[in-house]
Image 1 (cartoon, helix red, strand yellow):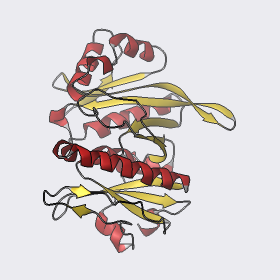
Image 2: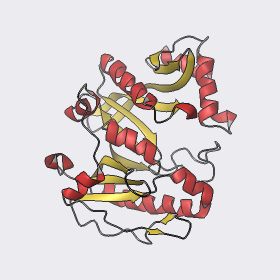
Image 3: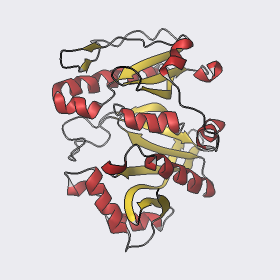
Length: 290
């Protein structure tokens, strides 16, 4: 069991600094320092910590920001960072931290939260898109330049920027007491949805992207990515770069054609796990098949 509470004092902020070192090891210069965290908190920002038996096991940090709209600047919450201790991943800590953030930001009178994540990380995609109900129409090339931490060094820091419209029924259905079940691969295939490209596995079991992005020929599409990109990167760095550049082209074309990332399927059934983004054009949605 764990509890979540606000972190607001200089005495507790070093816990957040240390958690950053644990999660993104390898670059001290990338740690957001105590004085920046405190300044953000004293000016509308939020730092929430998850604790197990008095020990911090995760945190989320964000601050007020502005969206550019045709009608001028519009306030939002920018969720900059979330980290969970490696020993407590896949235990619901990340979801609970984001749910607490959702509640706090709603009390501030805002309806929009944005953040970025690496679109090749299936675990992050499953949480952000499938469980939280965020959507994506924005692909950012090399968003943070050359990153030096242990998770990101060596690859272009391409990111999705997701939109979390926290007052919508879509999000309410995922965070309410009777949460919407996450989409399963069998559910998608029964509704006629199929991956719109095939992947090749080599003799090591590593999957390779197609040489070219295929045509976008349906209003609902599934785009497969590696289920464990971190392991693939460790095994074959050149292949990881191939995946970065393939998915960059794929999603930039998709968003130019007005597709939206609306769901993510993580299938851990028979055989190796698989991960799929669901791309939706216009008002099309798999909800009609539920």
